[in-house]
Image: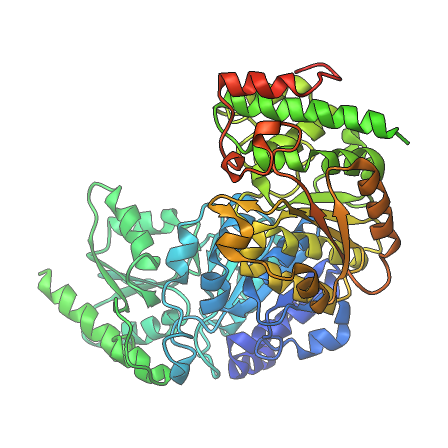
Length: 325
Length: 281
């Protein structure tokens, strides 16, 4: 077990999710010799330098070749290794989409696919490097769990849980360095079980990844205005924790989803699909990336353009909530 | 060691199986399957000699084979059944509703002998390379064999894997290209000319061996040579020239038979050219 203490939490947060990943994988690999890291030229970006020094045979760099990375990973899984296949989300999921479907979906190989720098994390790199549709794509493939950690500590917990879990997992990393801290101390993390961070009485905000922290800040703004919000960390988007949503349906006047992903097919899409099957449910407001490629900018600029900053989330929620009355 | 005559008899029966399976199913890919029959029979019976009753999915501590050009599934199923992985009667279920013998090899139905699904082209070389590397990491001295198609080489992922395998010195791997020169739309050299394939493969750092895949003595000799060249820092690749449709005169070297089954008359004609050596399923 990796130590969850204030020092580690601070260091991981400073590093951001990409580099915290390499730290976590190193610690997991020390205790489990079956762990291998397979990356397509992103060992440095994912903080795997020390991993490579300690376990040179267990760090496999395929060069810039994501499809081959998936094939190699599947073969290692076949021989009872636990491969973590690591690239930028835009490339691991999109370029290697069919191998992902084949090996992780169809063949159910025990591969852990990592999407570094998803959402707008790549900032001024621009649209080729943004990943706005990975949740939608993986969600449509049967049998792959999808986790998007709220902060670096949750990433570490998710990595540990994924290494223990038998079956394919996609872990989506969001946010940049100085990743805000949601979890200040150790807690119980379980794949497929969402976490209620704050209990309110009027509305329910269901967020994932980087948007959990922004949703918490938004809920504080709303609170001052007399709107009481429940905030949930839906770290696992698939399988969706229906039970926790079910409990909210009867008491909540508005359900809001917030994600650094396209409004199409992501967390909002998953919740919408679920709510459709329920006879009476509150109105759903989906917040996320607009359905268009946009001029590039730095991370905060891009969030702003898509109304994903805390005050913008609060403002959109307030407007919707007041319109219901 | 089996005699060349015995291997030919098995190959002949496998060819009959292929004709009967694709004919009964009313679909399938007889051409490439017939062409590669001598090789796959020889590989299983003379080189790999696996224990069909001790099949494990992870394939540790045994030589393993992957099929990348999954459309020649009728061939693989026949060889697996004849070798003893499952009863030959099941060959009659090829491509039928709910059969374990899907059009392209699957692993979700529990068919013994198959570890990796294929059908979508261009992915097998990555798998074979990864498996061979995993064997090294496991200190497992067994070998990995792969068969892939020639037209399939048009998929870019192969070249990622070719680069990788030589850079990582994956020298416990033998990849065999079924070079029959035909693909769906016509001759490979007309659809997408592979050019000087040997030079390309050598430039990618592989030890290249050429073999005639419709001649069992040549297969025996060149596969021995391939094995002798392993563990020398280079992966080995065999350019195996074969004739699509080999064994059935009217199918010979004709791309039309890539993915079309014989009708009643054609099946009858074809079977008249292939001796029933081991008994039909």
